[in-house]
Length: 240
Length: 344
Image (cartoon, rainbow over all chains, first blue to last red; front, side, top):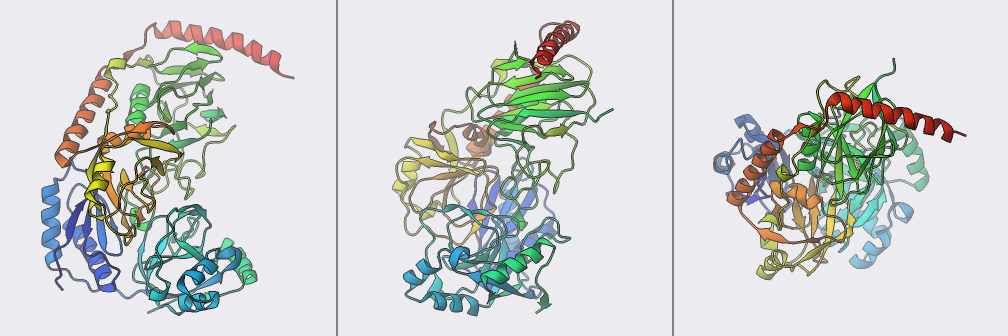
């Protein structure tokens, strides 16, 4: 499949952002992953690492080892004819304790969207989410498929601390957080599932292309499952 | 024989192990971390006789106190000026010092930067995580246990004693100069701002606020005007990204920055200048200047040349090694008595 020419945006003198779109779209995300693979196959010297996101590919490079001209010419050539067939992801059901101490913004989100708190939870749980990328912190899982009624701007001032396992929404995105971190998003709930656990054989639970659904659990179930997660539990998944 | 180590008597407000960073894992959300001031790290390491990116201790504002738990340990400092004492007696700045077992090197407050680097000849001896020994505090990765260095902690060393040869001294005239203005390249989302917004960033004075850490520094100054909204779909974040949330106050992102984020990034500090910006402390004034890729390349190469000249200008410290050892040994004996008397 061919598409529009990507926008090549300078991110200083050691990184280049290749923007395929400014929207969240499964087909765009598939093209990002395809471009990332094509670039890896091209085996250019001077590429330090690449970071695929929803709609762009960031390339960290050593400017003394590869010129910007070589890099941009290669990207433009590869972007002409991308094979964006993606391996099917896995399916996960992620338990969430909504509201109260675990989701301190639930009532505010209800107020701003004109819904009741239960309606916000129902709409959030109704989503069939696609994992678009892992970023921001180890295992932080960005999701597409959020009900448009729940699209809200981020907070003007980010919070400096939010807990591990936070289930949040920001703009048109939804997320599963892995560890304690700052955030400018709205906190709806918390999951005992650990998206990142350095002690696990595979430290990163989710992969781009996976599907996620949320299911509501009580605060008591959250405590029980948190204890099990401490001992290595993670939810089962099935092939799509 | 106990393994060689460096004992932390007092870490100061924050001390962490840092090297040149954890590269290759940002696709899994793993931050690069690494020294906030790579020039300071390189200076400390070169003075200690190490490769420039060797893992060292990054101290913050106060340099702390460190005790040799090996037959001898050679230590060197870079990135900031400190007054030094060895077992309470003044020690010369601008040179490496070899401590004998039990001797303590104490660093004052940093005179002119937020952070300094304490390098050990031969480096530390503990496992790297994902290819790096750098500590990333927020994800508790790297270092010895993912956290800051604690009082009483013993840091294992690679060498049982200081390498043969004299302690080196630096030439202060050969230290890389701090640029008057921090240079930045517009983008990747400069089109999310008005022309006035860009002009404001590149002309106004900004003050580093107390909300400044290894992840980033929030600046305070004239509001940078967005062209439209202040939300974008999250994408990658380069080192030195200047992101501007809705309130219009810029945040410069440093070593512990997240790998991706959703505020528009108006400009990116060039690689040569980022370490100098990271030296700024709360209350310091920062001025940005606009440059491009050609300017960045020129400054990058000039900095590399300065570091080469710095390395070439290293020379044995004044006084012979044997006299030095005798003097240090004498201090050790005297202070040993003092310490014994101080015990309850």
